[in-house]
Image (cartoon, rainbow, N blue to C red; front, side):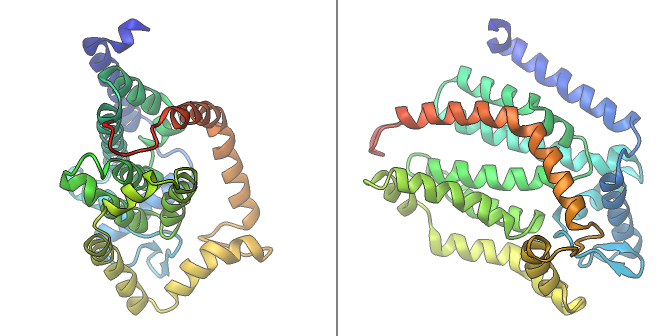
Length: 301
């Protein structure tokens, strides 16, 4: 274990993991319907030069996801050509950005050893490692939610702009990557944590954020595309907000993005089973950290 914590060993592990992932991105063809579907949407974005509406086929709009991942994949196509590596590269970059956020957060709240452990645990998690080289929207959602939660916690003691406004930039990334789900994944743990620390610590973190300017920044980045998408293809907001987030769960047989509720449930089950072991370990670690936190925000991290 000591070799993993040594600086040189840590760097070499990261380099080897990234190199192996890049090798797989280059050599392995698109492996399932999700990768093929999203790659085709990005390719059509390049060929049609339509950066507002993702198209499932030339005459069928894809309303199932916002366009951030498709934008990045289309730009990568333009830079590196139409190939597997190009369309997968944005997911790898998003995962590395998330790793940087985790590194900085752990460094500011713990030690260098803690930061190295945190990054290694994240980047070697099976689900995160597979997604880092796959054509998916999840790495961008993960980046947005991670940045927002880290910024919320660090706001009182780390006044740099990328923490104070990072909370709202992370929300914008999440809204453009997955939609309102990003708000749920961000605010749900904050509400629970605030209830646990309602004696004063939570208020300290909440007051440290520039809510007015930050909220305007989130709206300025995230809202224009939603308006443009509805104007260009009327009915999008009803399908995406109501259909994708509510009807698919309460109306039997409702199809979203070409998938039935049963298919969505089966896909979710596979993801949850893959992440369950890591989630249990993370929950235990988090409970230990919560128990050791101080009640006031005057003490340094």
